[in-house]
Length: 204
Image (cartoon, rainbow, N blue to C red; front, side):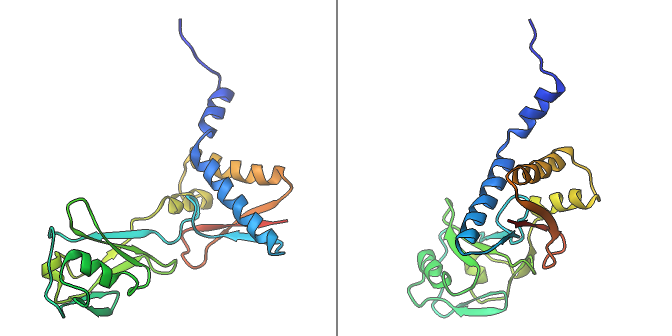
């Protein structure tokens, strides 16, 4: 005996995914916050699968359990920091970095290597590691890194009609239908800071 379902049932199953659920929930949470502040419009331009405009860039050092010499420098996005104020171990390096460089979080991975996570700005998806004197000890290479395009760029391209993806089209339409059914006015507008992602604008 075989089991099958018709096209309407297949579409229902396809729509039952976390992307739609999370997108709607995040937008609704922002609406509740804004309405509580006596606003009549909500704009979401980041922080969801469809609107992400500040992707992370992760750079991992190649040296396990590195140690530096006090006074050696690390240069991130043009800003120089002299390391060694709290010690010369990886733990001390992480303590020195965290809180010093805006948008950069230092940590250690399972191999005890330095990991630098840069949350980019909507206007620049790059992270530059300069030629600091601690680079060799930490296993860092002086170069500029560019973020991999987040999924939001694909949603933008589908919305603009420059690419085709029925699933993404349906997901965006489902978000719109959900809010329109609740009496909201919702539209997509180009995020002019990135020009390759969109933002949701919801009025009520």
